[in-house]
Length: 125
Image 1 (tube, rainbow, N blue to C red):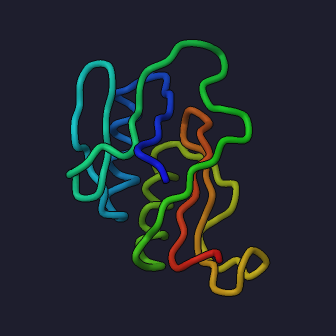
Image 2 (cartoon, rainbow, N blue to C red):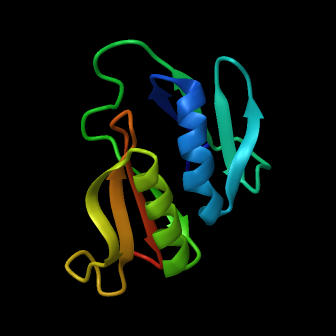
């Protein structure tokens, strides 16, 4: 259904440090990098998520939310901890959340630019 997704960030170099660490436990890496954008994909093979620099007071879209799949609870925990160490804000801490779905294990954070990111191990459906 999607070809790719893009997020705006204030500082592309700082965003790369954050997202390199955030995506490492999820198996994603930089697939291309220029002064105007970064692309991430599974194993660094395909550009599925793009980051690009933007100016202005509001960077993140109000209500926008991206969810990423993790292979295990440990990968959720590792990505969550990496994000926290690099300035993320917790919306929902990593762990089981049966109020969302019976087998749900995940977290929701805001990156340093306010983009809402979720990591889910297993399924919500």
